[in-house]
Amino acid sequence: AAASRVPQRRRVASRAMSAEAPPGVAPADEPAGRKAAAVAEMVEEATVWCAVHGLVVGDRAQPRSGTVPGVGLVHAPFSLLPTHFPASFWKQACELAPIFNDLVDRVSLDGKFLQDSLSKTKQVDDFTSRLLDIHTKMMEVNKKEDIRLGLHRSDYMLDSETNSLLQIELNTISSSFPGLGSLVSELHRTLINRYGKALGLDSKRIPQNWAATQFAEALGRAWAEFNNKSAVIMMVVQPEERNMKTLAQVEAEGQILPDGTLVVDGQTVSVVYFRAGYSPNDYPSEVEWGARLLMEQSSAIKCPSISYHLVGTKKIQQELAKPNVLERFLDNKEDIAKLQKCFAGLWSLDNEEIVKSAIEKPDLFVLKPQREGGGNNIYGHDLRETLVRLQKEQGEALAAYILMQRIFPRASLTHLVQGGVCFEDLTISELGIYGAYLRNKDKVVMNNQCGYLMRTKVSSSNEGGVAAGFAVLDSILLT
Ligand code: ADP
Ligand code: MG
Ligand code: MG
Image (cartoon, rainbow, N blue to C red; front, side, top):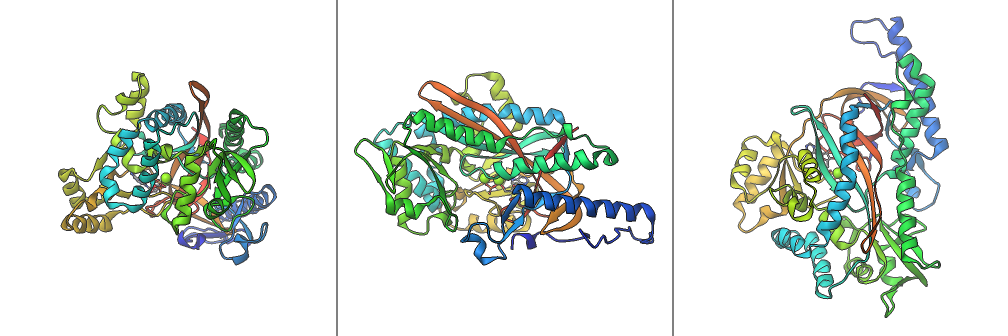
């Protein structure tokens, strides 16, 4: 299903070497034929590299891929060559990573700000309401998290209208693809080392990408701060993955000792790393909510804590973009200016004027609910209909959403490879910068930018998301 959502136009089959002759040019045309052959050779080289180096994902067409390890794997969707990206914007995005890490930590400590900002959302959005309930319980018992670990990814697009780098969102839970993203940079470096001369590309212009190693290091250092050699790091995952715990298993097998220690299946847990728990689908029953609360109540390091999770909501992003709000959390004026520079227009829907503008010109906006994982935003005609409908409904229904200025990146032609098939299409890209933050009381152990993830999608598709099937993995070549 993932692969089939991207329109497979202008195929360049890897073995068939279908000559990509433009209309009116005979297939025998030499340069076009040579180019198609070269692309086909690179695609084959690349897909073999993926298989050998583990740049693979479970194939949804293979039912057993979710339950039997190592069965039914397919190369992850990728772009054949890295996307050009201006070095100045790259530098700007990297510099923002430690500032956003710091901001998340500061905001997470202001429980009242989180509760107040999300109070209206809470009335109309069940999922946010459940998260806030856990947060309230922690505030009531004055729960302190001495050791705080954040593994974040801040996503950006280059707006062609203003020629500026604008933030799409900041992820504080389950920031995806540090592993496969690092591998794609490696794949592109390999291909350019081999074919770069003919293409006029230099692999040194692909920035090093150690996202996976650096996230692992952050988890390891959090474990060290916990200071219990026999404790484990527990990965909380969605069902149909192995070697880790689902929320339901944590509920069934977990307990908290009188001193706050989290023990699951007889093992002391130092760090809980959430690769699940960000979507309502991850909580099909009270069992899963019970597990989330149990972990939050424990002394284990949560990545993320409930506070960090809430800081990553779209609503908080919008609140932080209001005038004079960053100043409540940060002292350094230069840092504040850098953050503000990357904020796109963000509005809450109690702003009637903006709602009116969005109904008039829906293509200039994106309507966002408090959800993660791609595929949830509303665009264009649907955006207009939704706003009109919600306005008619009584109550606070609009408070479940925020409005965001639509960003328009410049489109370029890219070779995309999915399921061993290459096709060329007009695409736009989104750059994610990973950041790791670890602190123990007053000591900041780590506050780093940690590699990146480029995702590229056909420009006619509104949503991003590789797992959701809209985009391919990519890397960057600095210009
Ligand atoms: P999620 O948490 O589900 O990933 P995002 O805010 O990242 O939510 O939105 C999903 C996708 O929608 C993004 O990856 C991007 O492709 C697109 N998108 C989001 N906001 C904008 C925007 N302001 N302008 C253009 N595209 C956007
Ligand atoms: Mg997100
Ligand atoms: Mg996103």
